[in-house]
Amino acid sequence: MKTVLKYSAYSLLFYSTATLSFDTNELAQNTTWQKLLHLKKDGHSLIKSASFFLSDHTQFSPANELNATIAAFQREPSSQCQFPARAKWLRSQGVPLPKAPACVAFDEWKNEGDWNSISLVFASGYMSNPASLYGHMLLKIGSQSAHNILLDRSVNYGAIVPEDENGLVYIARGLFGGYQAGFSDQRFFHHHHNYSADELRDLWEYKLNLTPDEVEFITKHLWELLNAQFDYYFADENCAFHIAQLIELVLDKPLTADLPPWVIPVTIFDRLNQAKHQDNSLVSAIHYIPSTSSEFYNLYEKLSPELRSLAIHLYHHQKDFNNEKYQQLPTEQKVILLEVLMSFVQLQLTLERDEKRNSEFKRVLLKERIKLPAGISKAKSLSAITPSDKAPHLATKPSKVSLAIQSQPDSEYTARFGFRLTYFDSLSPDTARVKFSNLEMLDVELALADNDIDIYKFDVLDLESFNPSYAKGFDNQNWAWRLRLGYEKQQAYCNDCAFVGLNTAAGYAHLLNASSITFALATIETFSINNNYYLSPGIEVGLLSRLNNSFAFRTSISKNTHHAAHIKLELANQLSPQSDVRIGWDYAETSRLSLQFNYYWD
Image (cartoon, rainbow, N blue to C red; front, side, top):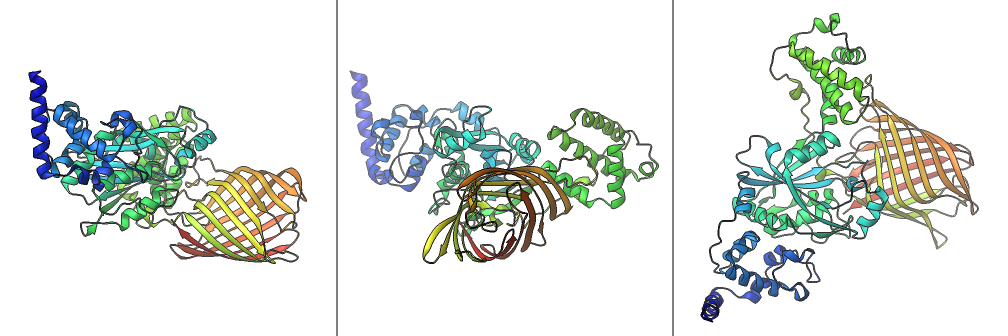
């Protein structure tokens, strides 16, 4: 009884004192408190884990959670170890709290590095994984004591997906919240190896201009989130959204305000680059981290023609290191040549190509390298890349509206109005995206003629990827593929002709120069002629080229089993980062000419 009275008296004294310095109702409405709870506009939290809340989840409100938090911290001071960011913020608001005991687990985690900076990292898109088509966002915590960024701590947000989940199942479940998701942390070298070395994706690090106190506040809140679970939504509540919200904890103007119903990493990086924080730019520096393939191809391009030719010869004649041309090279050039070959062999092993042959050649290269003096060659400096014009915040905005005027004999359609949800097509600038590729979702065009509106195009998904060898003479796979699901009228054939359903293609792509390819594809598509449906195999050959940052064109000729040859030509001229104009011409049974204006936004 005495214990109960003592506790009641102590609690009464605590709350009486507290009311002199803070107002719980006012604190409950504070935006920082609501950010700590990850509150949605409807008053509910995005977090689904009951363990994240100290109040009864059936009667959740910011005020109830605030009162329960203060009471828990007072009753059991060690509970502050679970919620260090809440404790830090409450103290800053004048709430008297007892001193927390030693938080062993948190201190061990925090003391792994003398953390003094936070960066957001963009990983470029990965066409082989539906989860990564749009790129990915990570958070990286920089350490003052680490001498290598690979030892920094990186934080990932992602869905908890069963192994070997079917890609189409993933997209379907991901779109409708079919997965749980959460934050996880690792040393940065794990993510660097996964993205840069294994998946061959370029990385861009945006270092943020934050104070040490802000870095501490974010990392403490991150600790609170490591065991929390969320519902995962591929289109909006994804990695970009949740990691941006983590940064918003210390920002006055949120990065996720007024977003459309879909959130793409490049959109957040665009806003990040424009954001101000305490009258300064939020981004203090941008650091590019090239993938293994980008490093190799850039280095290979910078070799002299003689060294390039010798590298190709040695790769195809792997025991010919007594070759006179190789033996006459200065030591430094031998080292560079061996490193180029080692880089290419490692790239082939990563891609699981001819593993036995490349593993044997790797051993040969190591033996040759041991014969030469130790030291770092100039290969790394030769491969240095400064893609100031390729950072993700400079990418073309993902959504599009369009207006086109089209002429065609005997056609009723003269104007088209379009909307595309995301993301880019093969004539878009290749900033922060996979080169020579196409990724479009929900692309709709309406045709207007004689006051009648008709659906001209309705694509649910249009994926295309050309992968030429960038190192001519080396063994490499020049593969290409396409997957399209949708509908589009084909009036070059006839007024009642249309592509309906599925279009797939596979074939070959060949690099002409750094900005141009030719391709040849075997195609299969479902086709409609006067409401009769056919499965039409065919072939397509073409040329795709980007002449400079503003001008690109694509031309092709295709033939299937149900139609005459179809010739297409499209030219694109970028007027600004948010607009371009395109001229199109195609011919089969009749010819069509079109002029289209595109406006890009997010």
